[in-house]
Length: 188
Image (cartoon, rainbow, N blue to C red; front, side, top):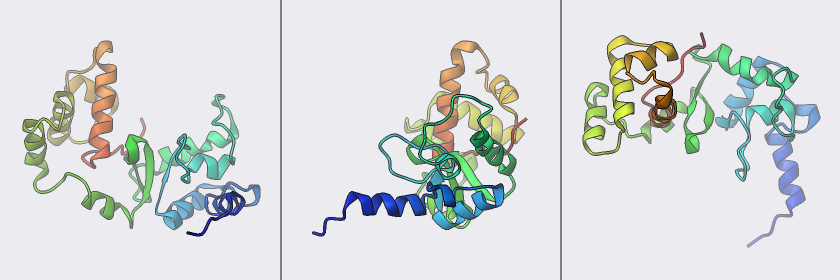
């Protein structure tokens, strides 16, 4: 087995992950091209997972800024502006973390999901098998019946608007996104 020196790995990553200052993303068009080149990336860097992220490609290898006025938080705007625009697919997919997938690669991810037949029936089968929570079932049913809804309306329609239901609601959304059953399509 050949041992590759860590410096070589780090140098390769700084170029392909676009973390070196001369290669960092400057605009939304470069962000789209970065995702298309990589195929899929995380939105944020994930601890102990050496993988490209939109944040690091914009901000470099530095911690995520707590200040919302940090200029590199433009990544939020890029993500939000492209929801539902067919430029990339965004959802909590890999390890249930915020993931951005180029449209050419998204069908491959979908093919690996639990979706196998009819969206109107599959979720009921998964629920009966104990592989879909009651909250996820309620949210999915509402979306099937009503179409896209903002979060407040969705929580209300799914009967999960009480403050004590917040974590259950968020977990259900993440579970549904990770299995390509739903995706965020806009910010209101």
